[in-house]
Image (cartoon, rainbow, N blue to C red; front, side, top):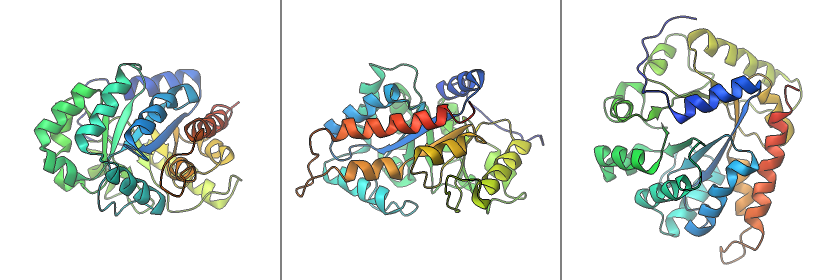
Length: 284
């Protein structure tokens, strides 16, 4: 492994969770939902139910008016949440409520810099830490802007997690890794079929390449929609990330007025259980 001068906060819930997964000999399931989608009450119920359904780590999207890096499903979820009155402060309240019931499952906030900047960086980091946030994925802050949020987050004891893609070359990778902690999130632009396809071979090679440069766990996500696809990723990566498929399942449960039909949260949690079964059986 090539040495990279990495700056990291003290051991976190994220670190401990990946250590436990390694000891169990399996990959983890990372689930994404948008804070406040479709409404704060339903979202809290869903968030609280994810660990028992098999989510090892949770990414919670912070709604934003212009989520340019997200696909249509997550863009729509962000707009639904904003229409329901979701804010950064209310997002942190969801986490604080979750922490009253669960002290162990890592929560990573995922989103864009603008809402955090508007909230105030120092205030945001203090409130995020106090509410029980473990990590941040901010998709529009490159390493060149580390002084804006990444370095202050590290000082606050919050992991800053970077995205890498097939276009992150050897020259760029050290900059990406420098202040990254918790895990690396590899986002492939290729699809996955759930078979031993070229796309899966490429993921295998990408994970191996990242492992040569860093000792951080590697989570992979790129449109995983089924338990079989999640299992395929879990055979080679440290975690499989599922977002759009969960968000879409939730959206499909809305009625014509945008209200959630009865039983939909339970249905979504059932889907998460199926994904978790796929991930947990991948190396068996």
